[in-house]
Image 1 (tube, rainbow, N blue to C red):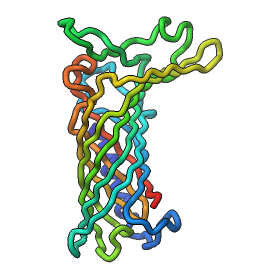
Image 2 (cartoon, rainbow, N blue to C red; image 1 turned 45 degrees about the horizontal axis):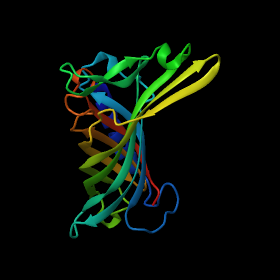
Image 3 (cartoon, rainbow, N blue to C red; image 1 turned 180 degrees about the vertical axis):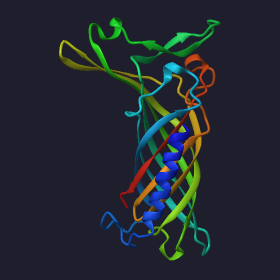
Image 4 (tube, helix red, strand yellow; image 1 turned 30 degrees about the vertical axis):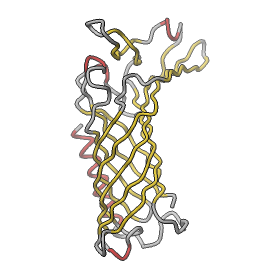
Length: 246
């Protein structure tokens, strides 16, 4: 966790320094002169406070993608803007071993909880498991305050931002990719898997001319409290880069 957080902050710092040397024009060519930003974000998903060893993730393969629109409101004649909008996000988590999410009765037999099941012959037959993942999909309302270094370049110049978001779960799924008799196959199961129905978190960003870097940290648990594997309280976080389409 500390290493990845340090890497994220280093990425943001490097981008901030490089951005000071960029020209005012959009790095990726002309964009439509429309108010607001339509942004694509790509990065990595990780888990903090993970107290379940079996929930360990691969170093790579934990992908994050989001698409969203935000609208800026300049605060008076200052260097600050308030930005709010709507986004859809998709976070994938790759297991480090042949496991998948499944349902089971809780210890008191009064309800269901999520467990980590081994992937055996009952699922893949005589096949060999190549990859196993699960995914959480949310619709989000992000808000943030941005500070532009030059207020004459609001919407185009170098900025730093801090904010938060609240999201609502729109679905989850597990995916098992395996090889059986030299044939590649996959199994996909769509379910909520007791993923937290609502999530909320904080983020920081830095950007210029349609390009940026971000770090998001959820303040809510990945699973509904008391329903995750071994009652885990693990919390997701993400970091990566973003591009504005306009």
